Image (cartoon, rainbow, N blue to C red; front, side, top):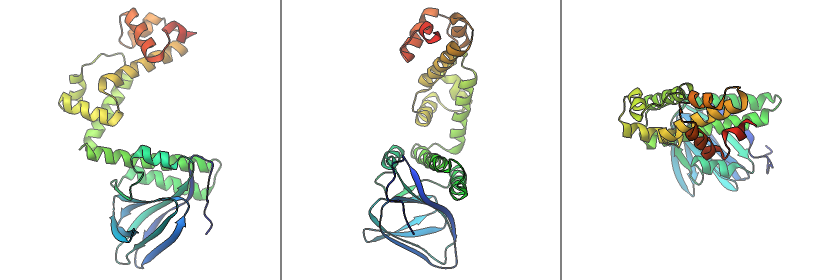
Length: 266
């Protein structure tokens, strides 16, 4: 089998598939492969060898091989296993893995995610169908799946359960559709049935911003869009995002965009 040795693209899928293994021992050995490899165990288990040590990788875990590494792994004939494998290359591979917190790790517990599974199935279909723009679509789907798994890791580390994550998603949607309101932290915390402190912690873990910072960004983004695309007066747009002091509105927009409302309107 021929492998892509290098690629000047940011990220390129070299090979991928979803395997269902049961009833016969499957063993794989590669010497100094030149691409990255990620295997995501959905069901069952796999045994890998790392520097002479054998490690059992179980459902809900990924294991990663890096360029120029010897690879050895096998699946027991007594265990029904379902596993995605993805081999990939590109100038951005290391940067992507670092951003996700995966780089340098061999095995990462990420959980079994239906969302990630659906994205990877679509990636495999794209890879084999070879329709127009399949390469960039495969890379995009792969990155989305990895980001989903990385998010699972962060939420697990911060003890954020699926219902809590769903509640925060509801608050985020509310902020985007009610950007003219000026609600307190207590209002949003009550939507999630959480204390203000717990809500603020989960919200920042999810979005990277405090609730106040996020709401301000939503207001500013909405105002900028209207300044550029709607015929409303500047005073009217300020009121529409819940700001009733024109001077404060001008300062707010300039602080976040570097331009005044009049400059944005031109």
